[in-house]
Amino acid sequence: MSHHLQRLAFLSTHSSPLAVPGTTKAGGMNVYIDALTRRLGRSGRRVDIFTRRDDPDLPAVVPLDRNVRVVHIAAGPPSPLPPLGVHAVEAEFRAGVQAFVEQDAEPAARGAPYDLIHSHYWISAVTGMALADDWRRPHVAMFHTLGEVKNRARRAEREPPLRIDAERGIVARADRLICATPHEKSFLVELYGADADCVSVVPGGVDLERFRPAPPSHDRGRARRALGLPAGPTALFVGRLERLKGVDILVRAAALADVEPALSVVIVGGDAADAAERARLRGLAEGQGIGDRVHFLDAVDRDMLAQYYRAADVCVVPSYYESFGLVAVEALACGTPVIATRVGGLQYTVRDGQTGHLISWRCPEPFAERLEALLANDDLRARFAAAAADSVQRFDWNVVTEQIVDVYEDLLERHATGAASCHAS
Image (cartoon, rainbow, N blue to C red; front, top):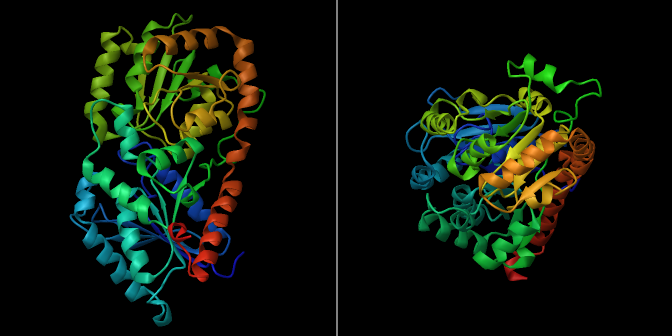
């Protein structure tokens, strides 16, 4: 371990790693921060994760793991805010971080309390740039999703110019950008003008101890009954209930698919805050004549989620865009084939024709065709399942953490020689 890298500040302003993944504004990024910081902490490094207080009952500091703390900063009302509302209180959030550090740090460390700042999402990176200037420490930024790419992936729900402009400013000034795939790096270079030397590609990770294949004696039908689900063929969706996730494509595909016995769809994600979107999707299912075959469940904890993956015949990821696509990786790690849209990181995680299918059209018919073919062919499903878990070993969190630490240490070495920013090289 480098003697330089002892303390890190993680910024996750708009979304806490303590939030349940699959609920509003909590997804793969939350899982990422939780998993990475735990491993950094267990390796002896100290990590503080700063996030905005969105509930008045939250303690100021919550220990997450050995050497890892979640620090809740008061900025705006102690209640959930949309991303632009969080951005509007960015200066208050930044001042809160600085005040916490002044009070918490050893006197000698108050000028530069951390060796490095790692920001997650554009709102956090705005704060990260300012703190990096104040503390004169290197700043690593991860976007997790890019506004310009989301706008190109969908017609409605445009990301605001404020976000795009902020992302461009971050790309121009961050000491290093980390992204999950070569595809995302190409977007940063081509759409945002990033210097390719400033962008490190490190994939997301998956917890292979939790998400692992069932034993050979596992019976998916019995597993479904144990979860209170119909025993017949089952397609699973996991994630937030938002239009970008393409859940309506799956619902329409299930209505078209000629599967015997009839196909059930299990949608795991969302909570009470997603009542309107859930009602829309339920209405769509009823309108398609399959209301009794589409089952909605609130987001579940990670251990229970692994049981759902292992119980399903296939996991469907019909997103309009995914920068990495953690759900697909988790499903594959559990030995469950994946049918996904050929977009973003899904092109790197799902091996078309080996561990599942990639579909180039965002419409239900090709999804229905693939569902029919996969569910009718036991040998094909077994072959995909056998290859699935091996295909995601490269995403083991221990491997990914080592790669992230390599990026940090390279940056610290550059900083020590006065050339932290790759823009200046």
